[in-house]
Length: 139
Image (cartoon, rainbow, N blue to C red):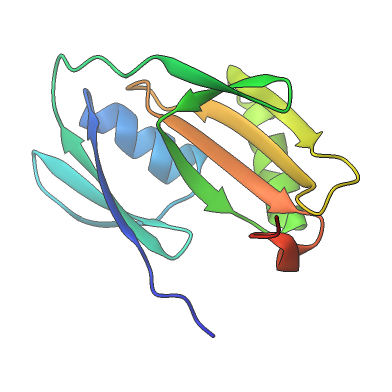
C-alpha cells in the first residue's frame, strides 16, 4: 500500500540558509517558492519553510533510550543504505549533531539507526532506519 505524502509547514529565520540546508545538504529538490516560503520534496513528502524572522526555536527534550530527544522534531524513515549515506554526508559537512548517528533499542523489535540535528533556524530533525522495516510500529 502506498502511503500518501504528508505536508508540514515550519518556521525559518533565513530562507537562503533553509534553501542551502534542505536543498543542498539534505538533497531535497525545491518546488514552488516566493520571498516568504519555499516548498521542498522531502523524501516524497511536501515540507514548506516559511519565513518567520526573530522566532526562537523551542528547546525541550525528552529522555529516550539514554538520550535527550529534542521536541518537537520531524524527519524521515529511510532504508539503511540511504541513512548511512546521509549520515556520512552530514558528518563530512561538519554537522553538529544533537544525537550523533547511533543505534538504539538494540535487540528489541524497534531497533533502529537514528540521528538528530538542527537546521539553521534551530528546527530539530530526526532521520532513522529500521533494522527490520516491518517493525516501524512494533510495540
